[in-house]
Image (tube, helix red, strand yellow):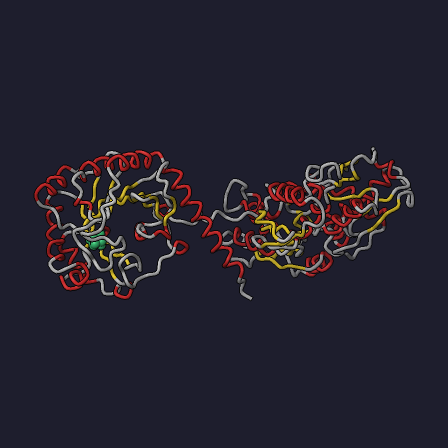
Length: 270
Length: 334
Ligand code: SF4
């Protein structure tokens, strides 16, 4: 039997250990056994993938874009969560502010999350540019907490929302996962509303280098995709990791981020 | 004005907590009732559990508590069996009797009406076996009617000391439905000494004779011994003896002596440590047959409806187990 596949993941919550131990156990005894290594940030994880310390990286969209850049497109995405294929950024403001779209942000204050968060900083700026707002036309309040984790902890987005509640900002850009976590607009009745929703884009994926042969990756992906929401042994892991189903990657969903990284001159090391 | 930031606090605080662990989130200023409602709504929506609000803070467990009764073997689920104390008086006065039975003990009979209703409701409530005990049930003049009410409803076990199978009592035994009834006769040892020392001189010989009579009548006999926990390793001679009587291995039951009733020593059994067996006496519903004469284990004086009593036992059991599970989390190995 071949050595287990080593998957890297960034530890953004204590539950990462439970999740990966659960996934590792799910693969135990199959032809595609695996183990995992946890990193404190995505920069370190991508370095380790490039060095061959890990076979697969559970990457955010920004980590994927960086890996593509550093391998000249030789890396490949193996799978993602169903939720990763339809990620969005939500622009929210206090209810009743009367904002009707991104253009209305001209001259106002927009709170953004960590500068390395695709959903709460990089893509929001890209969407503003697409809406014809030049640099400086919107007053950006950047909240850089947990840099290195690409916004996974959601803390900076919560702080951005707090800035709106505290009247330090007129609006905030957050990921749809944070919007769901606060209960959309239902738990804070009359407090927050979405005034613009971005088009869908792709979020995380399992990234591999050419060094990982198909012979090894294919059985692993097949077994991953066989995880079943209706199986009580699999359900807790899927719930904790925030998906119902693992799916094939939707690569066109990364185009907006590639453009954004290029427009904003995002450095290669986050 | 509600403090909307509470929702942000919840998301932020719970994100840093391991699944199954708890966190305290201060409610902050504002209408505490409204804030608590918001917290409860958030928990319900996100699959977390609001445990309580204490000193202005919401105590929340990340994730769902697993059902505390989920790991039980199917036979251990309270309400699988229903025990009924037909009466409390007995022809013997064993020194370890958990029911404090003796010839002087008041009868406190459950009576045919209640037994019949219990048997009927037991079927509805999903009970799969009835057990009749006492006292000594064969002292009752209407025991055959009680047993019939039970065997008509469900498979039934009748506990007895086996010493009274003569005359009209033997006639009553003969009228019972042997396809649906098993007798469980108490016998503590392979030779008279141990048994007689607790239960009275001559009682061993009469119990063994009772076992043989019941077997001759074609009734399935189970034998149950009550032994101090320290003696349960000297069982081989006893099993050999029961084998020689023709008692099937699965019908040879050994119970540890409980520190209950008349017993002056034995296993300490508390509600928290004892898997319940729903038990009905003339006085109410008890946690377990070993404690059917102890008010500390009275669950409710309301016997009917039986389903409600069973539900109450399950609720309490679930609660104790949840607390025990939580206690194991209070001491993470560090
Ligand atoms: S242990 Fe049984 S036989 Fe002995 S006194 Fe109690 S009820 Fe009667």
